[in-house]
Image (tube, rainbow, N blue to C red; front, top):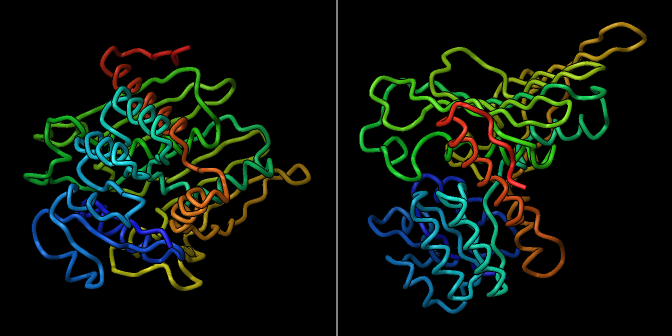
Length: 347
């Protein structure tokens, strides 16, 4: 049994980490850092609740620490935990800068500690389905890949740290890591990055929309997000020499977790048929259209991999190497938007 400490019990900690950790055999949520309030103790009466990371680190049995705090605090907290010889999972984004992330990677290597970033959306059902289609070559040679993460939130949220003009805020660091990580899992590192970051809502102080283009040979990859999409936009669009695939709607796991559901039943992560994506492919010279069943997603698989890697039974899925590449792409995107030109990947 691996004892886990969770630092932070805001939206991310209570929604995406605590219930998933509790659902994975071999992991025990042993302690939670909640600096103010008593929510954690009310929800998890059998878990020790402390007020500081120092108190958490004083609990000798805690081996793995999960950082689920505001973006700007990731670096210092992860560094503190690694130097205390704990294994660490950091919620995305890794840190607010590539330099900080690279320093954490060096510390983890020196201290011989596991370090991983919570890129849980590798285990979205729609992304698993996209992987399957590409692995089978169903679309022929892929020429276009679009990935959207759009919402409709026209009103600013006063006091929300993600919407302030400060390090770690903005939609690029919020949703960009998901989209970039997924693209790199599929296609590897690009030759360059082009981006347009925008403030679209009245009074916005940090970017609330972006278009990021990743440059690959003979393949156009576009990643987009906005909070002013009042009409449905596709989650994925793929065009290839033998056909295409379009998928609307987001993976159902987030909404289920928000409702307080936990992944303990066989139907977890399954998507209703009316939300399946549409495949159009050439068959005997004619374009044939059919729905593609969405594979079941399961965020437990991220923490199952962490468990097995800690036990020496498998390789780590979300490595620091690829997480550093995601951070590099985020910084290149910001530079590209600022200079209004595409930026080549550093050699």
